[in-house]
Image 1 (cartoon, rainbow, N blue to C red):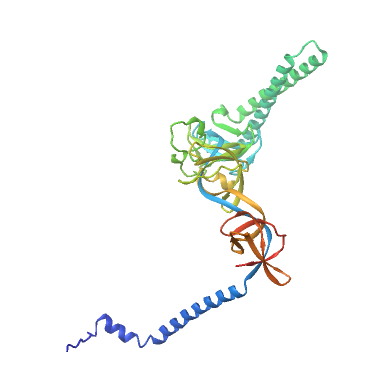
Image 2 (cartoon, rainbow, N blue to C red):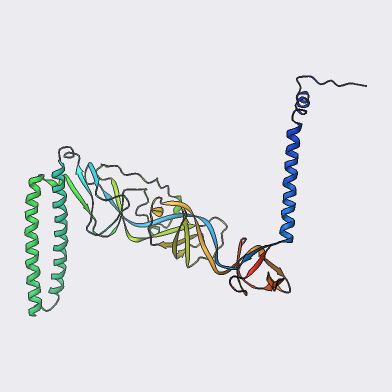
Length: 378
């Protein structure tokens, strides 16, 4: 008979040496696993004998889908008139009014030599010149309206003379301001520019390359998501002539293009909710493409979360139902009786027939029992 001898340095020999020392540890692990198994069995038995109770409450169940979102806005891109520096007069992403100064641009040739008092004087004069130009433009519109009426009427003649006088006064003020500003900086318009908004909007220096994108202008592309948008460039005070440096987001509304994943066959909703960074944004449906994979919505908040990126993934809630809500496991279905829930009637557990309006894996919206009814959750 052959005898096998273990070498002292073999794996099996080392394992046999370790096992006697680890017997207590292995026994402890075995007992722990046994206790876990017994606890699960006990929990299952308690759940069967003493089912949990829930109260019928009022709630909502939602159906959603992860989508890729592309944002389209009405954006006016601002281009630098010369090489120089930009000084912002409002914060990034600020909502601005029409006629509000948002930044001043200073030519690199005079940037270092221009003192702070001179800059303040240029800013004040440039802002007033802009206001005068707006006043004169409005007077010209009013005069055009009066000219279209019967100029022989006394009231119209008086109003026209008043407007002409007002225009002359504004033009005189403008000429005086131009003389004063030339004393501060000769040929000042070549070295200084005040950026004043002519309509309300959101001022931003974050450019991503998608400004001005309009789906209606493109007929040959397969999907707008093929465009490679760069990340938002942070504000750089250095200006290069002819290059964009900021933008004004107008209209306080934007279009969101939501692309559904392949294989989706869903009915477009009239309204939807988009979840972004934990916030909910209400959307109104516009249209869908011929594949029914790109849904177009309008969004009116223009919140910072929706301005950070041109394209991003988000969770789209396309359908919801609100009403009396119970946990789905509390429902039971039989062919003859339909859907039922178990409740207590005078201390006796009885099934009660209900109508299921909507249901998902977690909750169900039902009719047939009052709010606050105690039911058994399986």
